Every structure is written in structure tokens, then in C-alpha cells.
Image (cartoon, rainbow, N blue to C red; front, side, top):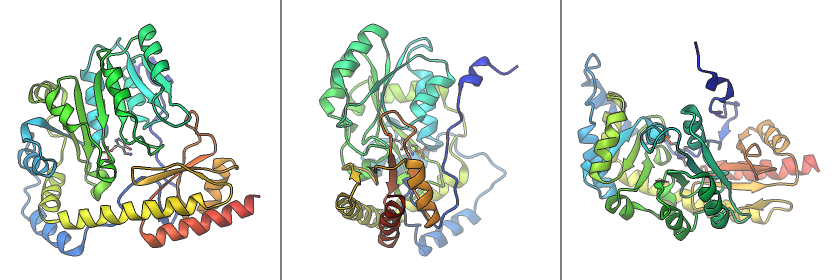
Length: 351
Ligand code: PMP
């Protein structure tokens, strides 16, 4: 018999609509160059697919450790950071203890808590999309929570929460997960805390820097925290091809990644300026590789008008406080141009 809990759950929604220009999943718009793919093919040819992968992803953890300036003992890898979010929801506190989540944010924090039947303390962000500290502390006093999730910068609003607010909430004894999926676009981090404190971990991912297809997420924390968390990790959670491909790209493709990230950051600032200049559009400043914007029209109608023009963005209006909002991932310059003119035409056709 399936658990009654399942009837109250919703599966994670992905955007699957067909469109030529896909700006809906915050991926890097540039695929890795052909020479790197040739190197990857050479490595893949050597693989013994009848064998299990290294259960500890030792070599890959060393390479990722070098990349982030962290010893491999402080790293645990996941099948995407999604999996690491699950592990944290399983491992921190007891299932009857609450999970604090400032909302609107990345839905996996709530989904993982719901799957386990954990109580949630979801507190609406202020109108500036920063944490509402007073309300959060009040709710934590009355409801209690032991685990806190922060998307830093926050998906889908794009801003960084005030660091001191995260610290003040942590002072109430909450184990703090700082999800830095967009770190490469913001440059801001809690890494030092994750290496110094037993109550803080940082999550990173290779998904936003060109390797979303591999599913490699990274948890950074103190060695004793990582080795405890390892007890809930599935043994071969990072596949053999993913380990091999990630190793090649991180060893040989750093220049490609750095250039691509820089281009996206420049484009983000340009797209923001263009959106700000567009009549009726409110764009929110972003430290990530996407921009949230609001129009006076129902978001579902704007979304379909854009799809008609072959541009796919994400309708965010289902999240609390984001009525009329859509999120556009930053693409290549020509994709961003196509989005901007499609949006202008869509808004004209709706008014
Ligand atoms: N955290 C945040 C804040 C995200 O936006 C995403 C991806 N949309 C993830 C985690 C999941 O990343 P991964 O591909 O590593 O599972």
C-alpha cells in the first residue's frame, strides 16, 4: 500500500513545452567545445561499463576540491544538489522537527520536507525579497525548527539575502544549508562558515556552469559533518560517465567555463537594463544567471505569447507573492535579443 502522505504531495514540475529558444531552466547557454568532447570520447572509450563506479568519487572530489579551494574530505557529491537536499532533510534533526524555508524559493526544500512528512515553517519574504527577520523569529519561537534552507542567491527572485539575517536565525540553533547553486554568478559565499562550523553546510552544483546533463552536486562542510552525512548517501550515486566527464571538463575546460560565465554575467546586466526600459515591465535585480520580471498581464498569457514566438521562459506566478511573474534564464546574446523582442511584441498583443 502506498502511503497516505503521497496523496498530499505534488511531483516536481519541470518546463517541457517545446520551443526553439529555451530560457527556462537556468542552464549555461553554451555547450562545451568540440575539442573537449573529443577528449571526453577518448576517456569514455576506456570505460568498463560492467563495473560499478568509485563509490566515493575520490578523484572527482579531489578535482572539485581544487576548483573550490577545499580539501576532498570536506566534500560529498550528489546526483545533482537535489539529491543532497534530500539527504539533508533526512539527516538533520528528527522527522517531527521543523524545517524553516523563506518563500518563494526553490521548491525542492519544501518537497523534500513534505516527502518525509516534516513540519515546515515557511515564511514569506518581504516586498524587497529579503528575509522577514522579525516574522521568522516569531514563527520559529512558536513553531520551532532545526533545519533552514537558503537559496543564495535566491531562485527565482535573484537576490542575495542579508547575511546577518541568516546568522541571526542560525543563532536560534538551526542547522543552516546555504544553497549556492548560482555562486559562479554572485561571487558571494558562506564557505568559510561551512569549513569552520558544524551547523552550516554549503551546496554547489556543476549544473549551472555547463554540466547540467551530468547531475553532479556538491556539499561542503566540516569533515565530521560530511562523514556522518555519508551514512545516508546511496553508494553509487554519481555515475561512472558523470565522474569521468566532470573530471575531463574541470581539468581541461576551466577557461571555457570562466569565459562563458563572464559572458552570461555581462548579458544579465544588459538584459536587466533592457527590461527596465520596457514599458509596463518590472524587472528585479539579479545576482544569478536569470532575471525575475513582472508584467501587468496574467503570467500564463505572457508565457504562451512568448511560446508562440518560440521563446520558453518559466512562469513563476504559482509561487506565493509572485503573481504576474516570469523568470528568464540568461542565454546567448542572440537568444536574449530574441527574448526581448518577443516580449515586446507579446506585451503589445496583450494590451
Ligand atoms: N538549488 C537551486 C537554488 C536551484 O535553482 C537548482 C536548480 N534549479 C538546484 C539547487 C538543483 O541543482 P542540481 O541540478 O544540482 O540538482
